[in-house]
Image 1 (cartoon, rainbow, N blue to C red):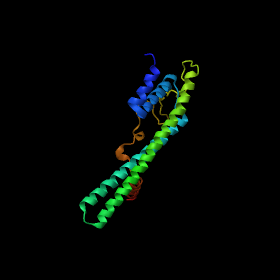
Image 2: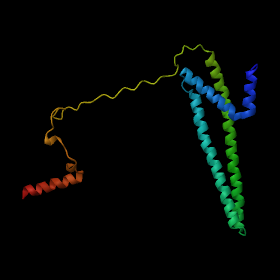
Image 3: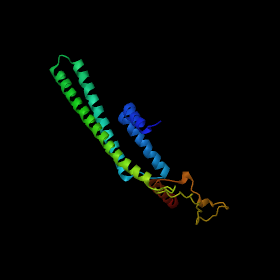
Image 4: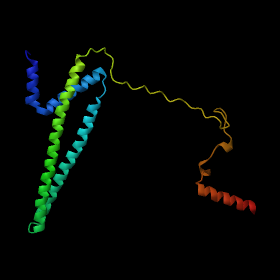
Length: 194
């Protein structure tokens, strides 16, 4: 109770390591944004998109490496006496290791990018906490959506209270495609001429 900051530091570093620090930072950042009505910082949004993209690349490299390793093992096991099969298994293992190293390098890049971004955003949070706040949200508030207006159909020859004339209603059976309409016209002309 005498030194909560020291205990918090030990808890974060010893119990959770880097993952716990990232989670604690993310919760603090979201809480301050929610409390003060702040929007995402444009740089923060770009950072999230960048991390998401490279995470997909990292997962794809890792999956490709696993598929290559598995296929090399299967070919090496199924063709133990074949020189080509053993060469394929060896090369597949080398390619698999290369894909996994690429994925690991991307992962380290994501971690260090996250650490740098956390430093920048922590500075923003400290500055925001030191600014006097009037209790009003600072972000752009979206405009409230209006209810849809009712539309009145006019110019059809009848009002809502009256019943429409027979000509105003098109039944589904009367609707035809353009080539069908042309065939009907030709048929009517032949009937009228006879």
